[in-house]
Amino acid sequence: DQQVKQNSPSLSVQEGRISILNCDYTNSMFDYFLWYKKYPAEGPTFLISISSIKDKNEDGRFTVFLNKSAKHLSLHIVPSQPGDSAVYFCAASDGGATNKLIFGTGTLLAVQP
Amino acid sequence: EPEVTQTPSHQVTQMGQEVILRCVPISNHLYFYWYRQILGQKVEFLVSFYNNEISEKSEIFDDQFSVERPDGSNFTLKIRSTKLEDSAMYFCASTEDRGRRSPLHFGNGTRLTVT
Image (cartoon, rainbow over all chains, first blue to last red):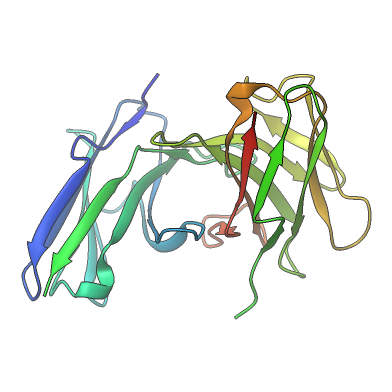
């Protein structure tokens, strides 16, 4: 039951270029979406989030776009830096009492110097 | 910056043995969680805990699992009789409140290997 899907297991971009990571979801009850970054041997670290009432949220080099009709969100990183190389997880919440997150399988981003 | 601390970083145990994974959440946080990630798979929710009781658990969290906050700082996950398929990375997380402006903070995880 993959309610949150990240169809690209990996992505490679050149330093300075834009990285676009994609995520699709199936559960229409999801109303809050987050991106987490994970380095090897570390836990996921919160990056950016978006509520379903918005279609864009920006924080520095990171922008998340939400297309509710397509049940699709994307994370844009511009410009990409070598330190951005990590696994990026998309996660969703349905507004339940516990703030439980449903994660995607992750995309490994490699930013080449 | 305050962080969630997990011990041990790696635990090896034999099938059928009990294990306890330990976590120290961020001190002013009130909501606590356990997630796990089997190698190569997604991060999965196990259980959430608030006010000294389980508030939600997944179907993975069966009778072999239990959680406890034995004192004011520790939060533990116990697996009573480990199975091979319990081998995974276990992440503890905490948050100040369950509101949307309070994202989960994760620890660095405990790698559990069941042989």
